[in-house]
Image (cartoon, rainbow, N blue to C red; front, side, top):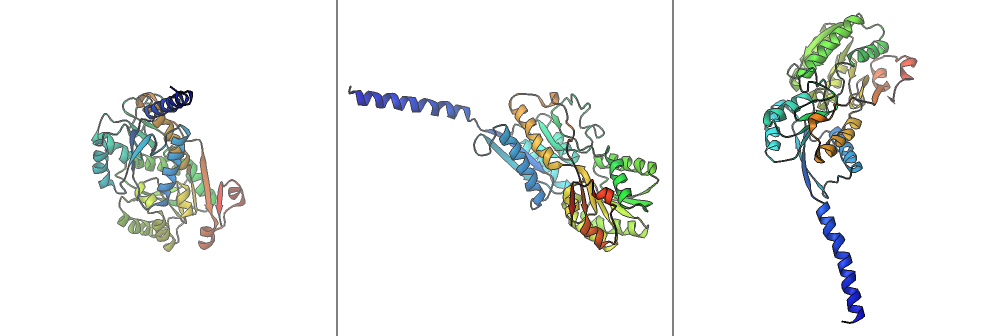
Length: 327
């Protein structure tokens, strides 16, 4: 054999071996995401991008070593069928958000691991029994929705010092929001405010509910993390403005849609952090052994355009504490 041919054979062998190892390392894993929002909602794309960014930090890349089944279920009646479909797709875990979506997956399967990127009150709704050791097949990140009720009312009272009555738009079909309403009612009593209940589980309920608030001389409307409300945030703000009512929301996108102000955890940050749970579960950790984490980033957003349109003046001390001011 000629020396040149011998070197060529050795070179080919040296190249071939890493390719075989690389192919073995790039085992494609399958997960699913159930989004309880409209597929056209731009905020959903923000969450998905944040989640993919988090996955990338752990070396998981869609189309390379990860396959993602994505489903949208903007109405509660769509959650059950979507959850059942994903559970039957033999995915290794399902990422979702909100109490109804988690409950729908639990009903569809008691085995598939569930990671909730955001949820209102996992203890109060019985999703988990202990934050440190959730047990079962579910874990994730909490919004602290019930715990933040007092803070939101305090901010609203600071923005509207003369307010005496507020109305809360909430979905009675969502167990987490029932708890949040009770928490808000207790907080309102402590602040000397009357709280009016506005049950609204469907889009067509928004107008009559807000009209009832206006007729009862409410000073503002509080919205919640309910997926229907968040998806229809612009519509709610328009209806409220028609009756001269400012809106207090939970998330930044609500204030950006025209609410007077919003205060709550950064869901974008929570979606990014949820990728850490996915990474650990795909590497063999049981969901029930992973503690439920709390938010670390909170956003206060004030919309001065809305304040001007409603003839309101926001105190400078409150403006100085805002993370974002829209003008």
